[in-house]
Image (cartoon, rainbow, N blue to C red; front, side, top):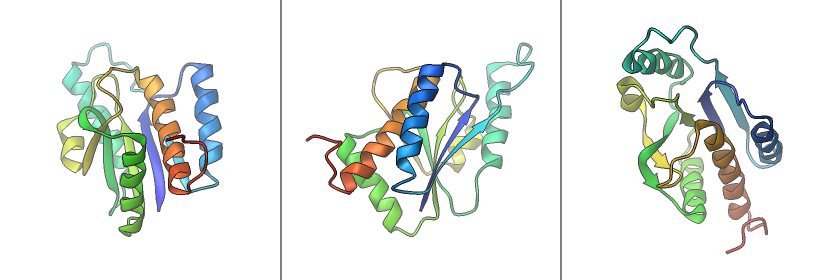
Amino acid sequence: MKIVLLMIGKTDEKYLQTGIDKYVSRLKHYIPFELTVIPDLKKTKNLSTDQQKKLEGELIIQNFQPGDHITLLDEKGKEFSSVKFSNYIEKKSISGLKRIVFVIGGPYGFSNEVYEKSNDKIALSQMTFSHQMVRLIITEQIYRAMTILRNEPYHHI
């Protein structure tokens, strides 16, 4: 199984990108992992929030492949402990999926079309994080999940 992290817009803060790069590099020792960045929309000044979500949604959906398991990072999603998140990934991997795609939307969330195509929604916390920080947090949590599944000492219970 391959894990894909799909997101709108590049990571602006260098310190966050450094952290993301660190965990992406580590992840490649455990599982095929791909980071896909959809460029920010241009000329959004005259677009409503719904129009922007719809356009971003179209770009997101273009990156889906048949058989993908789509998991949205959404504030209304299910929350996991790190151990339960590792169990979630393990169950997906043994189910025969080719790809699990974690999606971080734009600043206004997801379009209805993206929600309709999704299989799951997960929340990282009841707290709100910037979309920039979410990238680092989910990448680290995927890495942590891999170390938990291998009983490695990175995660201390």
